[in-house]
Amino acid sequence: MILKMRSWSKNTKLETGSKGGNYGDDLTSIHGISTTMAVKDKLRLFNKYFLHFSKAEDARCYRVNGSASDHEIANGKIKDKEEGCEGHVKQAKRSKHKGWVTKRPDLKAISEMLNKNEVLYHERYFGDLPGIEVGHRFYSRAEMVAVGLHKLLLKRIDYIGKPYVKSEYNGYTFPLAAAIVMSGQYEDDFGNREEIVYTGEGEKDIPGKKRQFSDQVMRCGNLALKNNKKQSVPVRVIRGHKCDDSYSKKVYSKKVYIYDGLYKVTGYWDEKGVSGFKVFKYRLKRLRGQDNLTSQNQVHFVRGKVSRVQQELPGLVCKDLSNGQEDKCIPVFNFYNPSLAPTGFKYINSIKVAKNVSIPPDAPGCNCRGKCTNPRSCSCAQLNGGDFPYVSRDGGRLFEAKDVVFECGPNCGCGPECVNRTSQQGLKYQLEVYRTKEKGWAVRSLDFIPSGAPVCEYVGILRKNDELEDISENDYIFEIDCWHTMKGIGGRERRLGDVSLPMSNLVDEVDERTLESEPEPEFCIDASSFGNVARFINHSCDPNLFVQCILSSHHDVRLARIVLFAADDIPRMQELTYDYNYAIDSVIGPDGKTKQLPCFCGTSECRKRLY
Image (cartoon, rainbow, N blue to C red; front, side, top):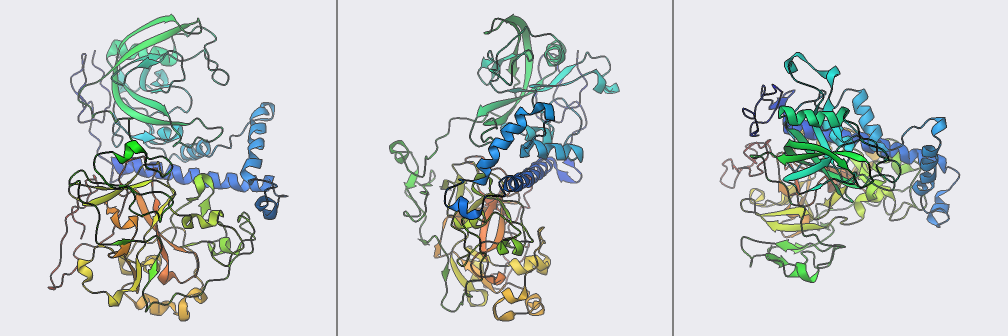
């Protein structure tokens, strides 16, 4: 029997009674954007809600511990207001008779998306979903719900039952499974990644010791998988792995979920499980013709030090590009020319200022002590629109991209661990420079980087634009165009999170009309001869980093710091990129002719030309 199901894959080759891989109209775009971007946009929206509710939880914790002063925290009487809040979370869980409301930001985030009808793929579909490729990683069950890959937060088998059956499914027996999660929760799951034995669900003490307490029953998800076998309907398989990269902390389950593709159910039976009760078993085999499974066996650097084995890795041409200037070493690999390492520049970890550039004096600071926690009393928070721009989770994450971020500076009373100094704390992630075939040097991370986390500052010599020579031949110029972006000058795209910048914060009290009359920025950062790891980060038309202007010492937006932040949750070993944002035909060579440079980012959103 052939199921006339809606499948979005062009490449999937189905077997065992199937006639091919496309069961309906192919979907390549959603609301005018590619399906890849649609998936990415939904995950970014989820992360925005996640950080919003994380921020709200931080505020709740502050209220819970409102009697504790910043001075008490700084002096160790209370280690952290978040720690004081943890007991209240546990107490809320125990007080079931009073009604339980989750405080987990990920669950609140997905509830918000469901309530606003903002999830992708509202209905359940069989087969691959466009925009979600084999190997796609998700860092919580809630993320999978956000994009429709698996619509259940707790249960393992996502199925379509009779209430959901449409006329296009007439003649087929339901329920039918659309997706399953295999995450080791059941005692009897085993197998390799091409063929697995999957244990049915139900009759398990999930909150307790996670043991079977009764015989499983052939119904719901168990019956769905049985029907998949009888009618040759493939099922999506998502495999959970233990990992510290997920949202899991304390009460969270530390797992990352990887989409392994489509599997067919080749058999099922029941047997006595480890706990002595009947369980259902299903044998699943991965369909041929899909992308290869991603490897879990990757070599990682640990705590910023190169081990003896790693020193002997082929292609390692430099153990530490920074020569000890960064808290974490930056190794360099070159598999195309093992004798070639980056040359022609000197590594620095902070901005150098040209002699003819004057840096304004340090701005007045806040009167907080220890860590800034109360936005109502913190003058730096008031500059950011009345709240802190960062969430304290994961060492500090930017809630959203803003025109400009005001951080605490030298004249502030808070210490270096203040969340409003997040971008000033050096490299937090283990970065690696490596040689590519077409793009020259590139940068990737050996650590997972959560969305909103600062990756690195763009460092070089702070210069005036009009004094640069042969600018068209310099690929390491970064114009400080924060003001122009804020005002949308020159076609620049404005951002959310606009803040009112007091004119007194501008050097020499330059008025807005003067600034707006300037078609190009006055200052730039030149990383051609002096720079840091950021100079090796490539362009992409679909980047995973974004540029954020930051003011931390003075408040002259024309001389803002340029910091690169994670736009998405970035898995290990993925190249780090940002959009150089050149306008086509905007670069003129020394001969007066327009220069062109092809783009090799290789993404589905590629514009084919860098400029």
